[in-house]
Image (cartoon, rainbow, N blue to C red):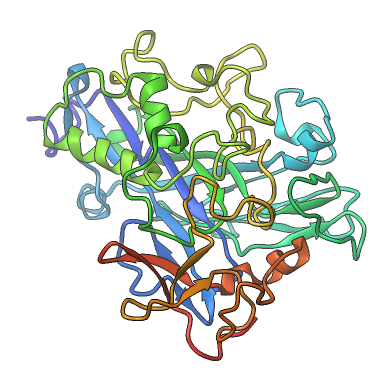
Length: 401
């Protein structure tokens, strides 16, 4: 009969989005990327951004057959167990410690593995031996439905009281709660023998201007740069299932920046352990399960293998509170402007990082140093495009920092 009645014509299962971007903040609340968040802030802070991973079935010649939704899995009594293996390699890379091809091998790199059916319910915790605040570093959670929930933003010091540096002063003595790594799922029952291609999760800083740059600039966009690098416009579009899966992949990285000195979500070249970006990805020329132009990262299986290790894609990035906020606001690829209008009708330009809501002076006190940004950047307004104008939203009179 074939899918969806049985798996007789299924060749491979794939997790989408192939690359998911989760985002941290200090807020307890979060929303799921691709859904309407209602507001991007709550409790006076930016919400975290979670990622929903999904499973799609493919037949011969890469033809999409459909999605294995939770309802579909339940109807066939198939149990899905999701797992994540993430790592943060920033301190290790900054200290120039050798990678040994494993993120757990160095003092200043930390990783975590978890499954949705373990006693911690998929919660991920890393450890930094020798760090005064490195005993237990939250790195997120993978749930039984394939939802990856990022951790709250945090600072973890080697020496208590150490000041948070400004960009571009990198330090191996302060860690953060960002990471990147592998998302997998195992299925029992009639699907358990099928190959399942994993996805990759990137845990990044928040997006304070979610729709300011809907048409990404080629030189600064992760989506555009990967399409050029991997030839993602090659090959046929396939059927509706193929197009849906490809759209999920592309929408996930549409807001992400390219490798842009040093990037925002991913560091591929500038200050990075990556010497050959193409070697990180599956290759449609050598792997028959990969479609032309598919943007899917391949986990490294051994020291001599190509592919990526957890933490490698973000190892060259600065910490979230440094990410050009303290140096190049208004110039980095996320296109958060230095100023916006107070509202659609008011022509008053306001500085986004001002501390006092009602102080519109160009010399108004604003967030400046690393400690200030680390503590307070989630409190700024959200810049939205309204009738072609950049408007500060979700910040009201009295919302001082």
